[in-house]
Length: 196
Image (cartoon, rainbow, N blue to C red; front, side):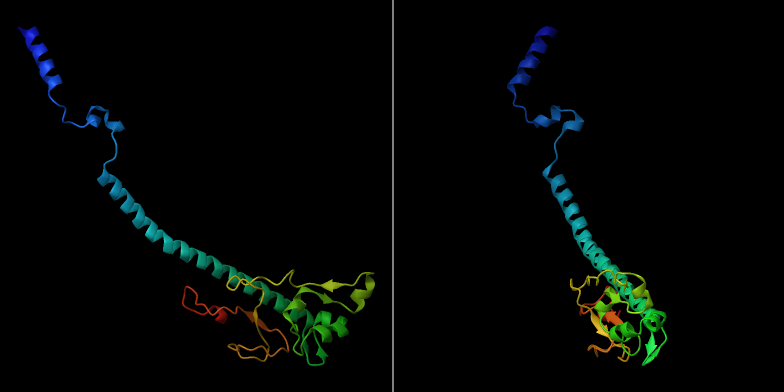
C-alpha cells in the first residue's frame, strides 16, 4: 500500500500547476536581480554622480588657478632677474649687464631698468665686451617663451608700469613692472584673477 500511495503522490504533484517561480529551484548564488533592487542601485549611483560632478568641476578650476599662479610667478621672477641685471635710474647705469652693454641697456630698458616690453625677456642682444668676445651675437634670455594664460588661453597678458598704481588697468607703455591676467572671472576664494 505504501508503494501505491507514493505513486499517487507523484501523479498529483505532476497534475497540479507549479505556482512557484522557476528560479526558486536554482541555487542561491544564481538567482536574478529584482526590479526594486535595480531601481535602488540606479538611484544610489545617480546620487553619487551628482555629488562627484561639482567636485570634478572644482578640481579643474583649482588646477587652472594653480597653473595661473605658476605662470605669474615665472614671469615676475624673470622681470626681477632682468631688473637686477639691467637696473638703471635715468642715465645712471647700475646693473651689471647695463654697465657692460650701454647701448643695449638704453635700447631694451625703460628709465627704471625694467624691460620696455614683455617680449624683451625672450631675447636681449648684448652690445658690449661680452658680444665681441664671441663671433656670434651674444644673447641673454630670461624666458624661453611667453607663457599662455590658462584663464584666457592666449599669451596676451595685462601689463603695469613702474609708476602705475597696483590696480591700474591701462599700461603706460614705458616699461613692464608687473603682469596680470586679463580674465574678469573670480577665483574659488572669491578674489578676482586680475588682482593676483
